[in-house]
Length: 264
Image (cartoon, rainbow, N blue to C red; front, side, top):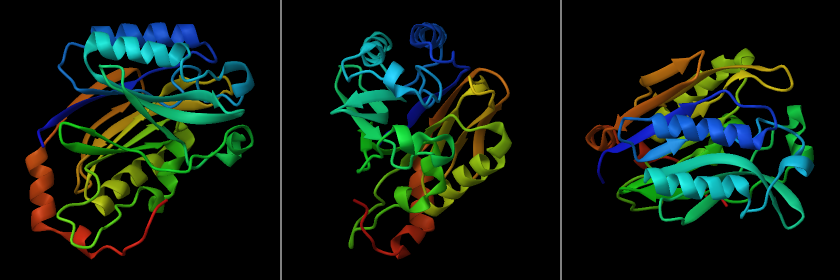
């Protein structure tokens, strides 16, 4: 396992305007001068957190996915972010993990945000997706999943030499009014899972008048906040230290004492 450099793209989003969002995000990505291996985009980065998938959802060969494939190849990075996807007559808030060679995986948001009606319009996911890059195992989650610790909990296999994953990612449209929960729970997820946590959030006012102030963060396995951006658009690039992760897990092997259970 090598060190891993990640970039959190904290951006304002144009409400239900896919072409404008893709153009703006591509311009930001092409302006990035620091070397990076993984770029994280906010939740529903093509539209904002809209409850109108009947108008804006796309298939897996749609404009947003094709854009991810093209930009990932051009920049030679992994891109990850969620968008509205239509599949089998249902709609999903789907996080796509796009490799530079065009291969991809995906995760469907497990916990749909009932307060905003997401559970009415979208189907919940049924499985976790743990990706890999440079020897790092990356557990991918979306926004409201953050409030449900069991879903992201490291599952312990008897006799395992290491935990299940190394980096926990949340892509979000988390409102400023509840930002204390966002900051606190990102830190908690890092401590309880002895892993790095990266949370990327949007900024700006969405089409429902909801204010977002970012607070995109990188947190280390001890719960220390390594980077945080508040208020405006920003690109947060941070190199995750493999030796720090390994040392913490070796010196403080709390993960070995976790309760066994199975997540389907």
